[in-house]
Each structure stands twice: as C-alpha cells, then as structure tokens.
Length: 410
Ligand SMILES: Cc1cc2nc3c(=O)[nH]c(=O)nc-3n(C[C@H](O)[C@H](O)[C@H](O)COP(=O)(O)OP(=O)(O)OC[C@H]3O[C@@H](n4cnc5c(N)ncnc54)[C@H](O)[C@@H]3O)c2cc1C
Image 1 (cartoon, rainbow, N blue to C red):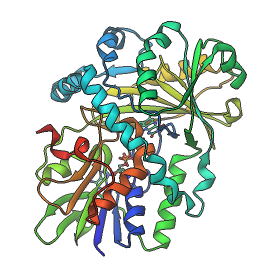
Image 2: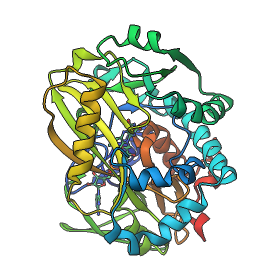
Image 3: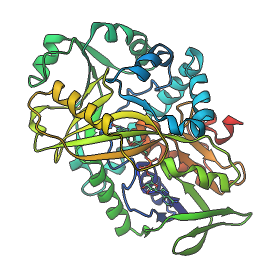
C-alpha cells in the first residue's frame, strides 16, 4: 500500500482521502484552513445529479447584453480583472458553442450518473447520514419566456438520463405555499437531495477519518516536486515525501500543477451566500430561481441563499451589489424572510470547458489532479475520489477519463 498525500480538504479532497483509505493506503491531508475551508463550506448544499448543463452553453451569447447591462443579472465581470482573465474568457466563449457545450454535458452526465455510487458507502460513516435531507430540488421560472428558453436544456437533460417533472404555477404553490406567487413554472428533479450543513458534513467526515488513521497537517503546500521514486511535498511546516500525491486544492490548484509542468487554465467563478437564521420551516426543499441564479436551501441554521457568478479572480473582497441582489431577490421570492446575515464569498474552480481535471500529471504518474468541479463539486466529490483511488491503485477506471485529461488544453 502507498504513502499518499491529499492537498485540500474540500468535498473533493476529503472524498479522495476516504476512498484512498478504503483501499488501505496511508493518507496525509494538507489544508491551511482545515476541513471545508474553501468553496465546500458555503455552497447551496444540493446533490445535483441533474446539473449536466454547463454555464458556458449557447445561451451565453444570447444573454451577454443582459449580463452586462441589467442590474438584476446574477452575473458580473470585474473590468480590472479582464486583462488577466482574457485568455480564459476567450476559451470559455469558444466552449459555449452548441457542439462543444454538448460534449461537456455528455461528459458531465457520465460523472453525474456515478455520483451517488461515489458516496453510498461513505454515507455509512458515523454521523454523516444525519446531514442528508432526501428532498428534491425545485427549480423555478418567473417568466414564461425564460421557461420557453430552457426547453432545449431540459430536453438535453432528459436525453442524458435526468428524470424531472414540469410543474404548473398552482402545483408550485401547492408544494411551497410560502413562496410568492410569481413563479410561472417549476421543474422538480427526481433523485436529487441536499445537505443540511455542508461544512458540518466534511468536519464529521474528517473526524471519522482521523479516528481511523488520517494524518492532518494544517498548513499550505508551497511546493510539489515529483521525482522518479517519490514526490517531495513542501509545506509551511516542513518537507515530506510520498509515493503518490492527489492535488485537490480547488480554485487554488493552478500554481501547484504548474510546478509539476502542467499549464492548466483554471480560474474561478466566484459565488456568494447569505443566511436567514431560523427560517428553515418556510420551505421544504432547495428552491432555485432560474432568472436570478440562486438557490434557497433550508439548512440546519436557517435558509441559505447561495448563487451568483462573478469573474474577478481570487481576491477576497466582496461585491456589495451582488449581495444586495441576492438579498432582494430571495426576499421577493419568499416574502417572509427577515434581514439577511453572514455574507460569504467562495471560489468555484472552473476550467474554460466546464469540465474538471481528473487524471495524472503529464510529468509524473505519481501526481493525480482532481480539481475544477465548477458548480457541482459537492455532487461530484465522491465519484472523483473513487476515480483518483483507481488511478493511485493502478486500476483502470470504469469510465473513460479522456474528457477530463489535464493535457486537453494543449
Ligand atoms: C455559491 C456557491 C454555491 C454552490 N452550490 C453547490 C451545490 O449546491 N452543489 C454542488 O455540488 N456544488 C455547489 N457549489 C460548488 C462547490 O462548492 C465546489 O465545486 C466545491 O466546493 C469544490 O470543492 P473542492 O474540494 O474542489 O474545492 P474547495 O472546497 O475550494 O477546497 C479546496 C481546499 O484546498 C485548500 N487549499 C488551497 N490551497 C492549498 C495549499 N496550497 N495547500 C493545501 N491546501 C490548500 C483550501 O483551503 C480548501 O479547503 C457551489 C459553489 C458556490 C460558490
């Protein structure tokens, strides 16, 4: 069995640690913040096996004027970041054509079809099942036009195996009577569920793994040096050597991959959340509002409103306008909500083609990359961990990993 290191303690890293330990490997987990210190802490909590349509699809071209000019658009691009972002953005737009976007959807659907299996055994770990809420996600449209425009996406989802029910206005109201009656149509995604506290879930998982031998180093990895017989890992606390290393540092993975010789065009789609404490009884399930780009999820501490996309890099400053929009939009959707608290910003790791990177570093079979899960890293953490364990163990994964190859960008 191998001495392995996992870099990053989000959904991808901790799931990878779980799968590696199940195979009998020894695992050291590095993270300067600890469990769920990144995007995994503050997401909308949905296990979204229906989410095979990437943001970069042909509707992007239709929606650009709305994105740039409408104050109600949940999308923002920071002009000062544009020079740095330009190469990524150009590729992102290139991948928004119908053919490329469908390639992404098909590849995502392959992963999503295995997402539940990636978590099934893990969910038996002590204390984890209590976080799982078996309530399906409801996605809403406040205008008939937006619903009409979503028909191609819904049809593609169904072709790719997603089971959904389309609801009329009165059926939406019957399911969620506290919602404002502004929603023309809804879509209920069968088989989806959510977590009542994504951060709590990961902390519980890490505690269980530590009880079974996981070593946690709470510091940042500064250098990765793959060699023929080992990988040298430098962190702020010293140096260690491993047989195999899995790089799962989400939006922060780019620089470490570059040290292994791979120039991977990873950037970030920033997203936000707000909390309405003690309001969870107002809705029964995660409720999304398509036109405003967010979910309201009834979590353990209250309704969490999470969403928006801001292209502005890894700086920690928050966009006050997007937070206001999230607050106003959620209060419009659910009139009983009080003032929002605990604004949070997180960094979704996103490649220009909307697909994660899962595969060996080109420089070394001893380094495996697993990052770039954009809007669905919670959903895909388990299956990604199992694929990394296949690669570390020298097994052929039961899925063609070509679409996720680190070298696909040339
Ligand atoms: C607003 C919002 C809503 C979302 N909603 C959903 C949802 O409903 N469902 C869903 O499936 N997904 C959702 N997502 C996406 C999901 O949260 C991410 O895809 C996922 O968290 C990525 O997980 P990760 O483990 O790759 O990265 P992260 O969770 O970001 O973890 C990376 C970790 O690496 C650590 N790290 C960074 N640098 C180093 C270093 N040098 N050394 C060691 N460690 C390092 C960080 O501290 C961090 O803990 C949402 C995201 C956002 C922002």
